[in-house]
Amino acid sequence: MNQPPVSLRSPSPEGVRPAWGGPTPNMLTLALSKGRIFDDTLPLLKAAGIEVRDANSRALILPTNRPDVRVVLVRASDVPTYVQHGGADLGVAGLDVLLEHEAQQGGAPMLRPIDLKIATCRLSVAVRKGFDYPAAVRQGARIRVATKYTGLARQHFAAKGVHVDLIKLYGSMELAPLTGLADAIVDLVSTGSTLKANELVEVETLLPISSHLVLNPVSAKLKREALQPLLQTLREAVPAAS
Ligand code: PRT
Ligand code: MG
Image (cartoon, rainbow, N blue to C red; front, side, top):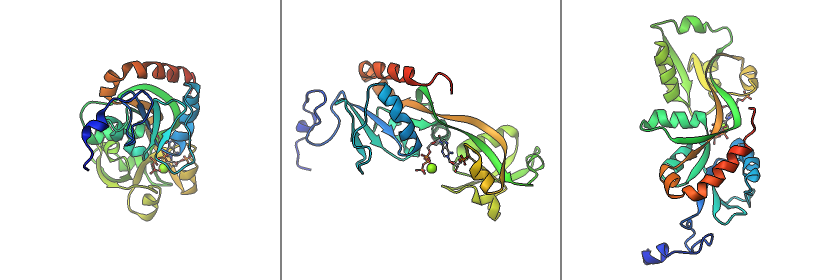
């Protein structure tokens, strides 16, 4: 608290982290979420010459083999917030998370220069087997939909002219139609086995999903020289066919 702020801001040689643990002026901070995005991003980073260190530690800030690049681990749904507000210069997040963030926040869309084509799935509507979905969504009807994606679900049903009562959930969406909490869910589907195990059927797809690289707009300008080569190698590392 009594530390003179001058010492925090004194220039340090590139790559040497100041004693207070913050980034050096030229350091790139990449926000990732643990799990499939982290696992699928590592090989792309490796192809770009970046190896993440201490991946199995409990630390939330991970160094890499490059002194000017570090990784911060955040919740998947927090990646857009970190990147938008400069807690990270860049990040990787599912299109579901990015578009939902934009639907909730409004404003300009985030800078999304590379589709990494990883963690692919789709955002779909699912209902209980035997539920008459076409009848439930006929023009002017009213339907109860449980989802974590209330912004995207609202847009989808509004475009169809269907009145929707949205029920916000944070997980286990599949349970909602089985317990009578909702008529339908909007959730991610990959293999379809989770729906199948719960006797639900997919009745409509809102959009195909993959994870994208997102950029903080200020970093995109001020750290352009450091970012450009990294973005280029990542672009080249993305599999041509998804
Ligand atoms: O888990 P947490 O609450 O911390 O955050 P999160 O669920 O957002 O993170 P995570 O790591 O589970 O998902 C991160 C991103 O991975 C998502 O935002 C998607 O872009 C992408 N992704 C790709 C998926 C899936 N595939 C996927 N299958 N995210 C979740 N699932 C879940 C889905 O919600 C459902 O419960 O897997 C289940 C369906 O899978 P199948 O194979 O049975 O159809
Ligand atoms: Mg999850």
